[in-house]
Image (cartoon, rainbow, N blue to C red):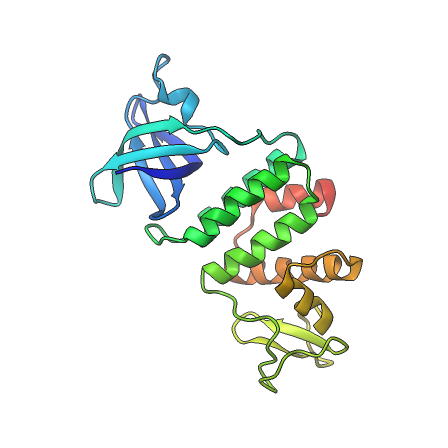
Length: 232
């Protein structure tokens, strides 16, 4: 069995091994024991790094499988400076939101594309919004942003809405505490167009609100660092 994959996180297991959280294209997130990976001369030490495209193989069907092969594929630029921190943010999101053994091939492809965009210095504030939206949709936590749940019609560009995390978009009311977004912002997000400054700001507030809701009070370490450093 072989699969394209990326290491999301790893931690020590016994004296010489690691448990590696890997995102694979067709099997989703899986946990693998990398036996002997902590030994000084282990070939796995240099291979099992985050943001490196790998081809991985494993054996077993239990929750914790055994890694039997991991080969570096190459073809991607390394992440550096702020892009590296953004990459760790992506990994933390995937670990928090994706259940194990649930395949998300479209999200895997989006993850690869996002790493490439970050490595090529594309605007992080836009790249991250697009990935956050894809993550919530792929994990079944967000429906069509452009459908008003009250009228059952397309949102109007000139009206102001809030997005209920459980029900979707509806016209904003005076008592609402959720972030207010223009219908135009929701339409632009649906189309992946974040060129407008208002769309960038409102989508940032909206995604921050939705992620916090679904995390149930759990904090994202990398997110707070990004907010402190760059207000992304």
